[in-house]
Length: 527
Image (cartoon, rainbow, N blue to C red; front, side, top):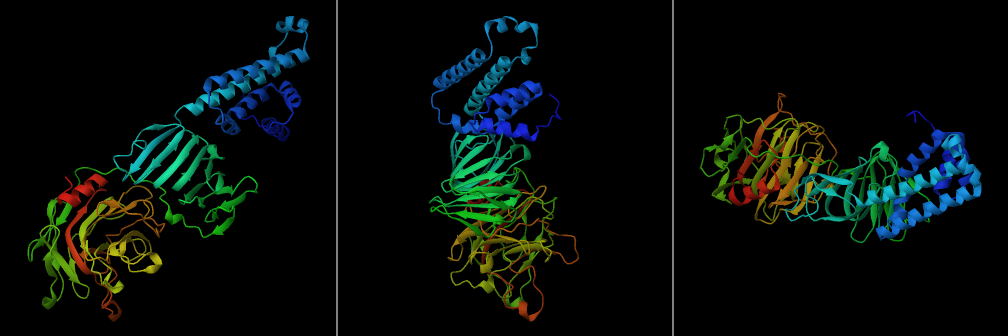
């Protein structure tokens, strides 16, 4: 058949009616007789018809199914033959084209449909998905291991993220905790948790069911979240989906930057689109012998970096506080640590930082006092340019509009990610901020936060390209204890410094993995 063959509107309606179970077998037979190429088109469409999957999933015994299908094929073929031809016609079948006979055409259709039912059943029993990426997952996860093939069945992820690619090109990004059921290459049931689906054009019609919603893709990228009690939300990132609470309702269309929620009373409510709450792209792999700088702060005055160095260089951290108010030294997690007063204390280096969207890990021990003020939050560690998306600054969150106060925050100026652990308890906590670099690195998808070796649940994630700028005349080198946006203006004097303790600062030119981060926390080394 030519790749350019186009169905007519009459043919399309006829196939749709046949697949829907309407009594149009005679019309379909006539259409195939008139256009032999149409028979092949019928077979192609039937094999792709997603209704087959829903019928087959109700059949539990493989042998019984095969027997039933073959019986139906035989019965249907014999009935058509007996009703349309006599024995004399059968004896003359070699005298003309086989496809020209009505009974032969009917038998062909019956045989093809039966074969296609079996093909679909076999496909449902086979693997149709592959785990293509994992990030910060627990070693105890048995199912979602990298490069593992998956078929029908339930999967659960308790920690981290995983990416699954289906044979039809659909990519699912899963965020723990999550539980779902892979039904087929065209259908997933999300029981609870969050995922993002990226659906190519050839897989339009891909379906996600939840306890409270039916969501069908119309060529798009979208996020779905299901709470523990079964309530659901769908947020469209690109393209369009259609969704409803149950099959008694009409579908509502949800387009880019729109969202819909579903409660347990079968109500659909338009809500604010929050695509920044979803992990859309998983980070890549870390390296195992990267360049890095390490400041231990154990010496009294000479804070020279140790470790491997970056490009063979080490850098001195200089205390820029007034001579009468030098940064205090306290007992740290390993040896001595610095304690900033939140008013005048800060250190600077000649290290420009790690720029653009290049991979990086910033790790250190942090102590935030219980009586911490939001005016004492900014600038634990920073570098770059104080301009949209061009900075790189780690702080306890001081802005309620961006998330709860006192949680770990990484900001690029006008874009940020905020964690979930309240750090304002006067205890030492190990902090790690990881950027997985690469094309289209986005702060909402390529940054992971760790507190005490555990991956943070993040919120208020901005969607913005990371572009840490080092070569602008206004760019600032690596500093500690002071806001990257600091000026000498009086308004900046009282709320541009950090108050709290910092120990064992590591700047690594790579995205460390969870094992390396935990080793760093426990042993003060990741090698």
